[in-house]
Amino acid sequence: MYRKALFLALLLIFTLGLGCVDDGSVVLIDGSSTVFPITEAVAEEFQIVNPSVMITAGVSGTGGGFKKFCAGEIDINGASRPIKESEITACEKNGVEYIELMVAYDGITVVVNPDNDFVDYLTVEELGEIWKPESRVEKWSDVRPGWPDREIFLAGPDTDSGTFDYFTETIMGESGASRSDYTKSSDDDMLVRAVAGEKDALGYFGYAYYAENQDKLKAVPIDAGEGPMYPTPETIEKKEYSLSRPLFIYVNTESLERPEVFAFVEYYLQNSGFFAKDVGYVSLANETKNEMLERLK
Image 1 (cartoon, rainbow, N blue to C red):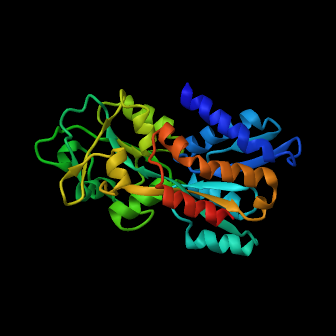
Image 2 (image 1 turned 90 degrees about the horizontal axis):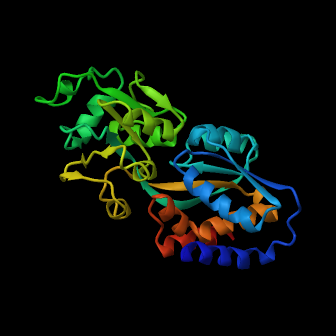
Image 3 (image 1 turned 180 degrees about the vertical axis):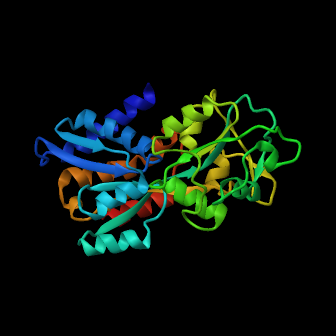
């Protein structure tokens, strides 16, 4: 309660300079389902003392969000990977200029059902065999001798997802290189339910969704050559976990000229550490956070 009250007080102080914001002002956000929990938390707090500003946040995935962002349809895009060259070209074509702002760190978490008592870890090579295009892995016994002769139920992000892009690039060495015969969704909560509801499921998504559902899921340590490593705030922050990655928001610079957008983004950056940790991600170092604030100016 004290932390909540403290942040509300700080937010109230922060908003004293927002008298120039018009009633009915709207900030449009879309993009990554991984970044969404941070954005949602920031938006809820911001709107408590700025009720005249409406923050609308959609979840189209990183790629889906960039389609809207580069068309000039939204002010901010949440992204769980850096912008692609094709997206840079699309923004340039439409005259959309932007700034890239890092807001937190995440570790893509590979999960199985908690009733799974044999998957003690997976190597990067084994993950590659499971998820590569035209993979012949159908059963657990295809992954490692001695594992059950039962079919694996695979669940993961859809192809518009930045998590999909980052996972395939890291594991397969090529963004987008993945088998297609798995249960896909842009909704990470749906992926949580899919793995939690199937004894032989295997899936992956952002760490916050695992952290919030540890009673329903079992995280799998990943061995990238130096022994199995669990995703934890410590291993993610130190980049010891092989699927650690930064999370971003991209902001249209023309939108930043509107006081409500600038105020929201500034508040987002100033308090990103609190909100990232609050929803289950890893906060930026103060030096990095200050660099992002300088970039905003």
